[in-house]
Length: 222
Image (cartoon, rainbow, N blue to C red; front, side):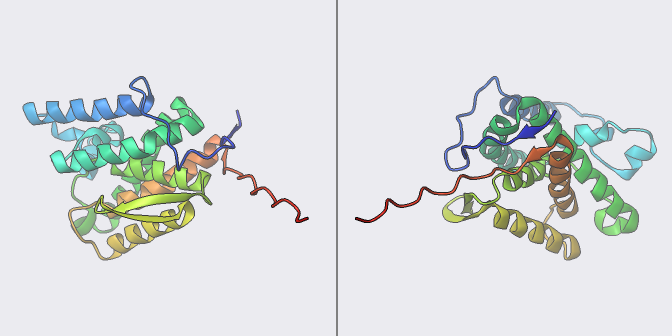
């Protein structure tokens, strides 16, 4: 079934979050899993790692996306999901949105593990977090609404407006830089894989970029 983005842009005016939406379900799942994670000692084979996969724990490609390293990690990811989710879900539908989110996260995890095979010292640690799936949502949204202006708030305060395609490019370059010269406790390679995974999922789902209508011609002078 072919899917085409709707003709009216929603980037500048995203729809409100519905608590019956897939976005809301994912937010609640992430929050509930984190609370359970803090309260109980969960098995080690829920985070994504080469050791777990070697033992046959293939479910880690999904479960690691709902694990987080702390309240700040969880809070930033849920805020990001709340910002991106309603727009993209309303554009491609709840089912494809969910598949894209989980598929991008799994692909990002796979890319990280490839890095772990090549350089265990840098990438060999277990990975948790929804960031790879969120990067997939970002790349998909930027690909669909490539020519639309998007507002990015640096440090959540300073507004910076740029076209979506440039935001995607900047995010990809930052992830590549973090992969080559790692900084912070961030899985940059998984982020890069998530960005690629989002584009691959869009292509597989046959979702087309939004074709914006040209602005109306000015009325002829008298």
